[in-house]
Image: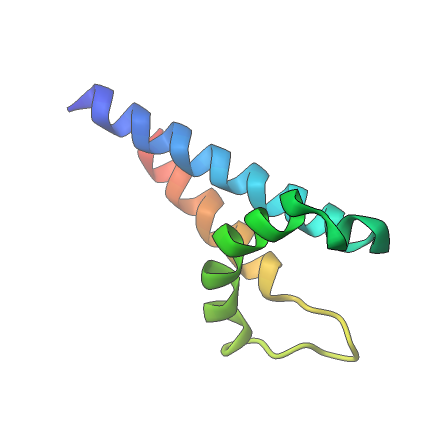
Length: 80
């Protein structure tokens, strides 16, 4: 059971950094056309879009990743 929880924690940590990488790539217009950006977006957008319905962009700033990071951090801490 402990091994399963550790595996889930590792996957959640990886997803956390995947979201972070996606957000960094969004700052660079040249990265938006890359295949890596497209694949990362396909993995991350379904998760972040759930939070956009809760917190709409304010003044052009998307705060949904903040809520996504908080929820993932909470889940990772609960598994530790």
